[in-house]
Structures are given as C-alpha cells and as structure tokens.
Image 1 (spheres, helix red, strand yellow):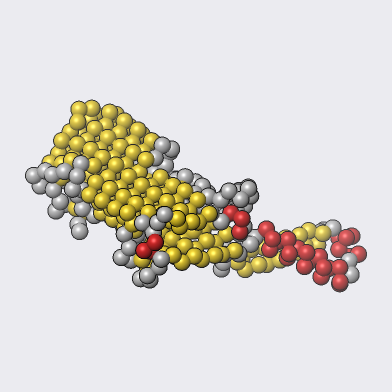
Image 2 (cartoon, one colour; image 1 turned 180 degrees about the vertical axis):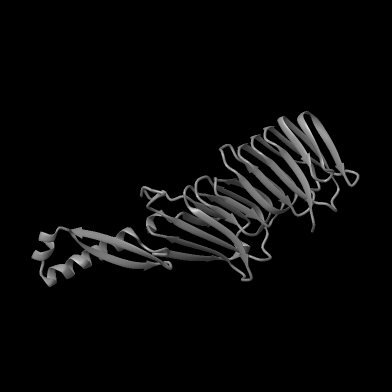
Length: 295
C-alpha cells in the first residue's frame, strides 16, 4: 500500500487538500530531512498554482472634475461599477498576474480602461482580473461606454447622460440613471436590468431573454427587441405609456389587463392610463410579458 502525504490548506474559508502518493519503498528510504524537503516542495508548488485573490493589487484615485466621459473595453476581466460617498473616482485592480492589468488613461477628460496589450496570454481558467470602479455618489458623466464580452459585469449604480453597454453572458445591471440608455448586443446572452431610470432606451438583443424593470415610464419613444428570447418588462402602474407589441411566433401577456394574445403578427397597441410615450417591444420567437410594479 502506498503512503500518502496529505496537505490541508485553508483558503477563503474553504479547506483544500493536496494529496501526494508515495510507493512504500520510496517512502521508507527517505530520511526525516528529505521528507521535510518534499513537504516544502509540495507546499511551494501548491501555492504557485493557487495564488489567493488580490495577490497583485493596485488602486488609482482620479479627480472627477478631470473626467467627462468613461470608456471601458475589456475582454475576460470582471468589472463592478458602484458609487460611494467619497469625492474621488477610485479604480482598483486585483489579479493573480500583474501583467493582465488593463491599461488606464485619463486624457482629454476621458477615463479609459482597455484590455492589456502586454503580450501575456490571458487564460480565463488560470488567470483572473477583477476591476472595481467606484464613482462619487453625486457624479454624473456625459457618456459612459462599457464593453465586457466575456467577463462578469456587475453594475450596482451609476449616472450618465448617455449610457452604452455591451455585456457578456454574466451580467447584472441595476440603478442606472440616464437620459438615453442603449444596449447593442450581437451575441447570445441574457440581460437583466433592474430599476432603470431613463428618458429613452434602445435595447437590441440577438438571442437571449431580457428582464427589464423600469423605475418610471420613459419620456420619449423607446424600444426593446430580440430575435429569439423572452421579453419581460415591468413598469410602475402609476405611469402613463403606450405599448406596441409584435411577436411573430409567440404570445403577448398583458398583466395589466390579464389578457393573453397569441400569434401577435399584427402589432398590438395597449394604452396605459390614457397612453403616453411609445414603448416598442418586438421579437421573432419568445413570449412578451408586461406588467406593473409599485414604486
């Protein structure tokens, strides 16, 4: 029977074990010094392969008066956007490979974050880079553009006159205030948007479900469309708006009235509280559901 050397390592509150098997003959030939060296080598190798979060970190603080627009274009990196009660824009990077930090610049009043061109190959399974962007609570940008096609995108709160977002499959978009909000999404992905407060929006998906919760009805004509996927839209019941619904192969479920229409090939018009700015909802395949929510 082989002897077993078992290493127990506690990481992020979880116990991980590295097990190394030795043949009985090899083990019995080792003296105590050799065994200790073997254990140290195993620990060293394990640590190299399992660097903890934040092994490399960097924080940059930026005067918000020097930033008018924010442009973010990443790849596999994970991005969190939030607000805080400080008076600076704070960008924090954490990674297990310093070479995968994105490039950051603040020229011509544009804060740019772009995927690295360092030449280091990014393996999303072996590498990670988490980015936190914290904006002052009362800060409003002129325009915020975010593109994260493969990493996780988590927007907790932000405010800009124009917002343009291209998310990947893992996304959560909440508490966004804008005059105009746009998502142009050419790839397959579900989109989850909660408490969107905007004057108008233009959301175009290719394949995937969309869950859209509005803080209020838009003030200007808006639209949301998907080639194939379910569309779920909730709007405060107190608002006034007009819905134009069109679905070639599916149903229009109106929870304001309790009515369900099948095969909505001819556009259905529904006016809530006497009607108001139009919300154009279209897909080719997938149910459309609209309903109210309390403020």
